Image 1 (cartoon, rainbow, N blue to C red):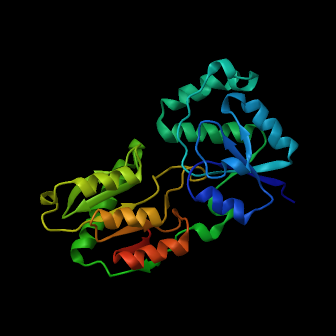
Image 2 (cartoon, helix red, strand yellow):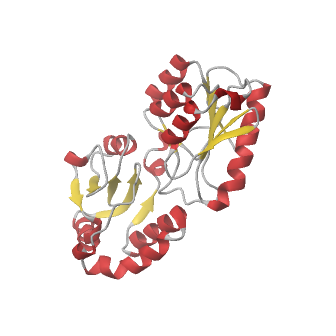
Length: 268
């Protein structure tokens, strides 16, 4: 019989959904990383990772899920416990390998300590975008051509480990998601001179990076994403079925219907 689940709760709606789905889970928030569950959790510092591991074991934890937007906190070496001091060179080396290298190392560290790292979708399968989901208008030939172009760009950039989303209008790439995230990309598109669209509305496509371990970094959309796509004047958005999480699903569906854009989940 599995033991207790620990939720490493970062920012956004995802950790809230998981905590509500598994009320017996140990919820953990981290100093320097925003979380909506900050006042309803065990609070720890990454500099004292040995104490975190000990607290998880004492609570009967054998599985851990990372949830929410994770920013890289500033470490204070003066606060390192023995476990973090031993891990620091390895983590610093992983930082130079990009997000994928760092996240793979984080998974390795937790599993070496005896904790199984699971994906949010393993805890709550209903979060996944299912293939065939379609809301709103049917994309026309122009939108389908832009979807194909955006998908091609995402696949081509996958090995570079730089982003999960792309906006294309009339075959022209208007923006690519990087470390600043989806909101920044869609704000940039909204502020871009309409002349670059040449009369085309354009589309947003979001997909998991090829080869990425999705236990920690599965792409997410929600009602805020829908609002940003609509505000950017785009015709709609396509998301990767089976590899993307929809948070606040009912609110997301309402937002799509109210905005008049389309949302489609497909194999990409």
